[in-house]
Amino acid sequence: MKKENLTPLDRTDKKILNLLQHNSKLSNLELAEAVGLSPTPCARRVKRLEDEGIIIRQITLVDPEKLGFNLTVFVGVEMDRHTHDRFKDFEQAIAQMPEIHECHLITGQNADFLLKVIVKDMPHYEDFLLHKLTHLGGVRGVHSSFVLRNLIDSKLLNLM
Image (cartoon, rainbow, N blue to C red):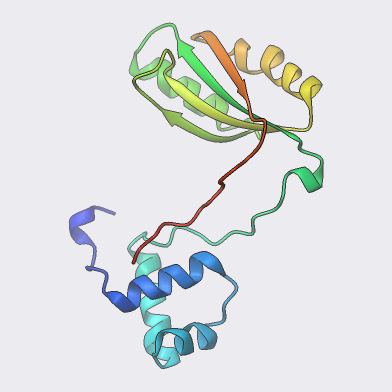
């Protein structure tokens, strides 16, 4: 949705968004009480925020390490050509790779894309790198940076 079509957010909308970012499992009644609305107007506001694309989706975050995914790698990918078709083909191919958790088209580095890859261990990463990523058409080079420790991992936007 285009930005100009959005209803301006008031203080109550921002409170709703902050509360849902911290706990998306809040019931409509709990949310309404927390922001000082009755349930029906609160539900209408949440629906509007969803319809306008401000609330994209609600997910459950899990701890990768507790599930055996102990290695996080940021991978800079340099492409051989900067063409629309080359980038489109690359983006479609990596969308099918569950190891990739984020992909950003970037500038200001010796890379065109920055990937966040989460895998079980170094052999898993080696397999991903050698048998998947570097086999994609147009990949000229990769640079891997391994996360030693995660200091900040926030998904929250400060709206107040």
